[in-house]
Image (cartoon, rainbow, N blue to C red):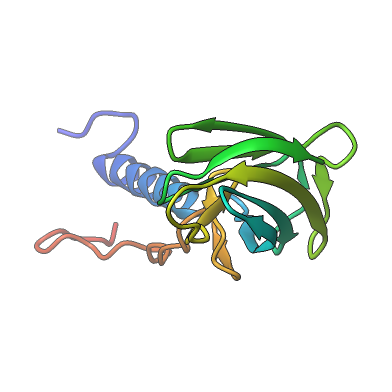
Length: 165
């Protein structure tokens, strides 16, 4: 006996369309912004127990408005004075933040600052830097994973099911 209303085939078709459209919507990533930077760290002067350094950040990614550069020292160096940035240090970890007038760095533009620090024994340069939490590798990397392949427009019928009406 056939009841009036929606048939099983119509319900299955509607469910398949809804499932396929949900899968497509879930697999479309947000617009990925490239992030990247390069850092030029140079010791401008050095004397027994102290040194001066200059740091230039080159923004290779999207423009930033407000920056924080982080690095660590490996030989006990301690920052004592800074200009064009606010520097703080906790153990080996150093954090440099922009000051009011140099917070914006356009794509391919630079921001520079300098500081004095003390050292004992040796004064090796830092080996890695991060700008706003992203490692400065001298190139760009996507901040979101690459898109996955979307599912086909029409799912294959289940084995043993009739697809005709």
